Amino acid sequence: MQWQQDILGEDFESQTFTAAGPDGVGRTATLVRLRPGQGNASDDGPRRAVLFLHGWSDYFFNVDLARFWAAAGYDFYALDMHNHGRSLRPESPGGYVADLAAYDAEIEEAARLIRQEGIPGPLVLMGHSTGGLVAALWTSQHPEAVSLLILNSPWLEMHGSSLVRRAASSMVRPVARLRPQAVLRLPERGHYWRTISDAADGEWPVDERYRPRLAFPVRAGWLRAVLAGHARVARGLDIEAPILVLLSKGSANGLLWSEEMRRTDAVLDVNIISTRALALGRTVTIERIDGALHDVFLSPGPVRSDAYFRLARWLRAYGER
Image (cartoon, rainbow, N blue to C red; front, side):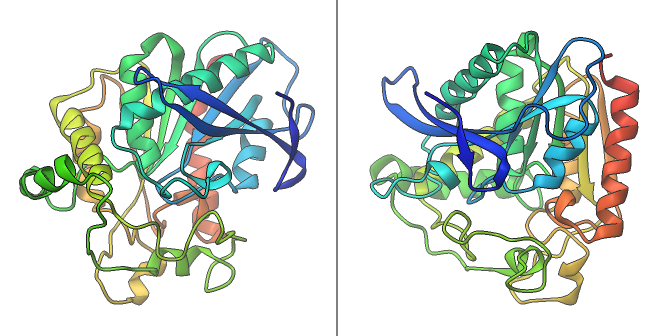
């Protein structure tokens, strides 16, 4: 497989590959990179790499994030996981996975491809929302492969408490067992999309072929997989690598639009997430950012600058030189 010019333009390349997990099923994923030599990466010392995992119903498009990492001295890669973004296929349901461990094989293959580029050693792993949950679970199972873990509004728990999760699990489990791809009838909300897309009130060119306004349909098997991941986090992951968790200072999760959604997390309950984050490992830093959106690096300019400042400060403390 060869690198091809990516949809993000000439500074980015991508390649699609197939990875088969323990179940023998081959799944399509796409690795994206900021082309070597782009940005301001330093040539001092050994090469280092960061791998970014997107959230549910999402894909990688934040070119500023890639350039931040290049300026910090890292080669930047992002993975569009199977049934998402560049890896969507017409025959497969968008966003669906029956077990979060099904992502393991493609993350491992992405890490192999990065090593093949001449970047030895462990990765910095960064994940957003559901990708943050996947990143934390993968790191707990592959401690030697990750040097730093950075989570941007990771979906570590349901709204409210573990009681909500247990109630949801008991309701969804029978449906997921018999009809895992059954679509659950849940309220549809496009509030978060409204705050980020330049087709609405946001600043970002979000391609609706890859990230629909109302997200993909919620299927029973997918929700069961996420809830199982939440339960694992609640039991504690004991991750040794230093962890940074970036969150908005507040949440606004109503069914109806509120102006508060322009300066809060309109998807997750950040208070329960900050509590759950403490169960991830031994060295956890939590940054609560005033005015941040669900993806803190898609927030309005001044808030975004604050998020990058906090990330850079943390890297100075824990980054390897």
